[in-house]
Length: 198
Length: 198
Ligand SMILES: [Zn+2]
Ligand SMILES: [Zn+2]
Image (cartoon, rainbow over the protein chains, first blue to last red):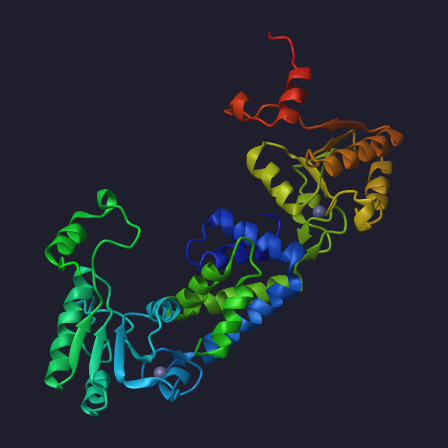
């Protein structure tokens, strides 16, 4: 590599998810050859986003402001609160469903071995939120992994302590999925949770 | 999207090659959730690379200096000059072959309809380079497209005018390629260019 800085740029691109050496190289060349303006804009926006985007002090989603727009939107039902592990999960629910309640972003899941306990997930904040008395249902949308399930059980207890009804997303055979290719755990769960057809 | 800046960051990532809305979103969330330091480094390096990396005044490859390291390396054979369309092509040859001559980067190919003529490809610079008398062979490594071929013919003429021998990369069935899947033009060329087996 004839330019040290070009080499550094290629390495820097590898911080992006799914970007290996080859892709990073293509990105660096592409920007320098054809997208210098767009590249400048990316550099500035990235810098500014990292400096300014923190977390909403009410729901812990990404936010530039102390309290985010979702938390203050009057059109959203304050009786429904949906707990998710990450901002990406929140976005997936926003884009896939018609949910119009509010959210709480755990920024992780209980994982004692990694030192992630109730405090790291902001559960004291969630607890006082539930204690306010406005929330009626806590929709627990943690991932269906071992740790996600443990977190869900913990959250369900917390909800019940505050007289809030906990609920959990349905698990089962994905729509359009073929039984043959569904993993055994999911299939077993789906079979056990079968419901009478109307 | 609750944050305007987050939305701008997602859009900014789309300047990268092969990055659509979904991937851009994943990149933005990944950096903000887990790689703020790496993201800062990427922003700074990108800014700095765009500001400082220009083109070598001798070979037109990317370079931070007026003349790049490849052009000044004493170990490289000055009698061999390889013309490529882009810095990415140069890198591909460096990585795949044992070539130890020098390069000339056209930064494009002849395309009169797009206003790309000899001047845009720096052929005056190439011409005076060949006139210096040191280069014996001009290896023409433009792409085997219609425009790349036209450029190759033009360069070959230029080389001959200066008493320099033009050569062209071999075309044919790719190693490991199956005849069945090779495009007709390539197969026809490979058939016509067959050579006697030793
Ligand atoms: Zn919020
Ligand atoms: Zn050079």
